[in-house]
Image 1 (cartoon, rainbow, N blue to C red):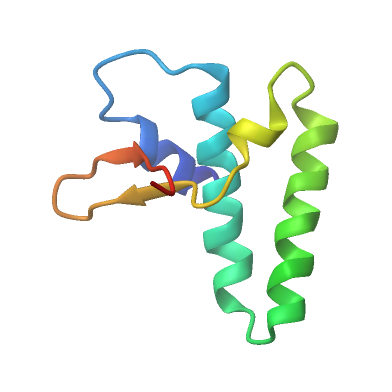
Image 2: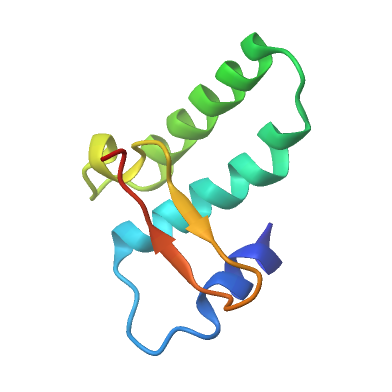
Length: 87
């Protein structure tokens, strides 16, 4: 989990906001735990649990905006991690 977060930020040229860090944290949590689940109810439970933990640990952010899905699209070729919107 820590390695995934590290790999997401190590090559960034600019600074990282608190919101971006929480999005990376949640993205890596979903990738690590949720991607291994099969049932839709399990995936939903995992997603809700990650949101719950984020709300407990990261109090000074807009949780609805920061944890809105989808979180990121990343490219293995460029190692870029970018925020994506549903639009």
